Length: 400
Ligand SMILES: Cc1ncc(COP(=O)(O)O)c(C=O)c1O
Image (cartoon, rainbow, N blue to C red; front, side):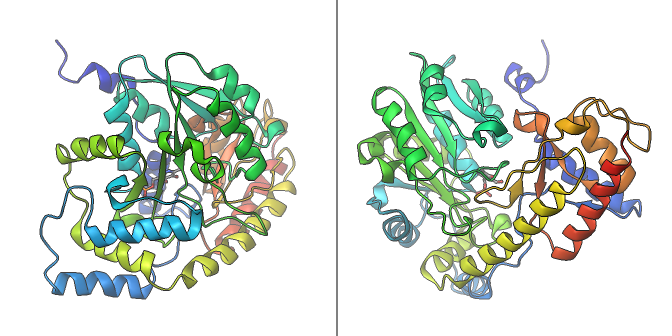
């Protein structure tokens, strides 16, 4: 009998975290590396939030809290949903966890039976399929190519639904593509779901505030109130307030689900950090200026990166509506050989050769379930981005 569980054999480590680790190793060897693989804002957490955390320590908020969040934070989350999303939730319908990641994981653990299917539009956030597998379910990826702007169509959703479908995981704006669903595109999906009452929606709104131009963010339960009772609306402070290390995420949904999720959490991690909860409270209730400032910076960087990449031979980069990622195609480079002698057989070979030959770290598309692409996180300085684009261009020009 083996030591490690059979469940573990089905999952793989996060490729994005692996790439970030490789970048750290190469830097430690003294190499000049530009890391465009990490999914976190490069800004500092705003000072009023940091101050609230220090004050929380001094006020003695250093003990266990209720498992799924302190009452004032749940209240602030309800106000946030009312303010930003026209959604009316009570504190009993809200759960706070150690990052949005734990909220998603709790929900899957609380609801999946062996063989239950979860529809995941691809390209997807790397963790979705592995979380579903850990929880005993069956991920059902649905390819959503660049020709459809990486967006799930109502036809493809309807075709993927079976009697075993339990959840649709929908992430808008998307990691890795940056694609977001406007009201019409979202309504087309919620219309399909109305016809299938056994399917629930996990709406991952983590990048809600990072939408550009006049794009209006919407979430499924807001667009179709009749779906609210079978929707878990997930969000967090990581990307909205540059708080990735604080580990606070939250979800709102039907009380039965929220209670079950709290049970899972009570037997694993208990409450998220008490100090971080007070910081999140300050983030949600305090001044919101950071959101607009970071949005403006990310929009400028998106434009810089999209224009620069479209100037690279063999690369085709669509313009995303949100998040801080682009997901260009490298179809035009497949089969060519790099100046360093690597055959670009697929997007993994491309990302490895790019790192070895130019020092630019990106994540290959196969990790997100849709090839031949790669993901750039442009949550880094304009200077680094400009340097990275110049290196990528030289790399592409050297391919023959
Ligand atoms: C699409 C998506 N959902 C959820 C998360 C989880 O964020 P956190 O656990 O930091 O709240 C991330 C983080 O990268 C993400 O990209």
